Length: 266
Image (cartoon, rainbow, N blue to C red; front, side):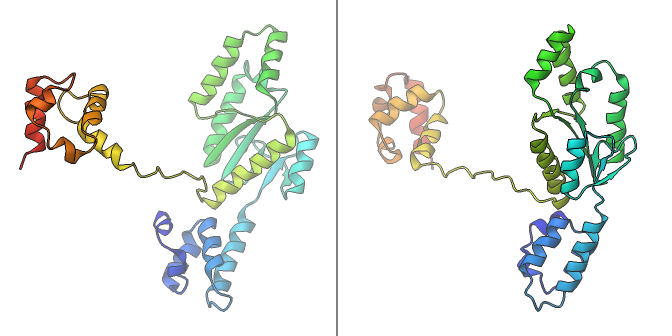
């Protein structure tokens, strides 16, 4: 539905064909966005509401019953169903996104190839899959030291996870981890990018002037500064003769002639 992202939703609130398309194949974010701009008396509002409800009901968010009781309690309060998840579904899933959680068993995973196979299976089952570790990295390093495992083994293991697309997210507070995992699922389900990327400010006119001067043959930052000191604007620079340019430290006669030629090219 990328085409919907470049279309103002308020422009299609009365377009039945466009609304049907969103109802059938649009993301939840598309549907919610369109519903927000629909007036209460819009004849397609009920249809859109029904499509949203259908999608929400299809999102079967579940947590594995073998999870830590505290995690089960937290996720249950957020509407997750406690059930038996199969291999490949992780510890929490909504059918589209699966999340594997590790804590005390993270160290055991270093020497258990079966866990890596589980991650592979999770990737096959879900479109998106993540690894969350509810333990601080410093605590894990301390555990390595206690077990006599070198830190190089740990960093190598984490690097290997990153290389296959499972960058561990370390969140030592279980409630914070719960909120983050639920939010990950929300973001993916909504398919709406909300990261704020500030637009770069328009460069000052002097920045363009500097770029033009530095584009001249054999003119770098230092020489450009010397030129600007003598000729602060392009208009001033255009009045300079070849002899004037040669008088600036760092500019030879050949370079001066070339700059003069460029400035007065027709």
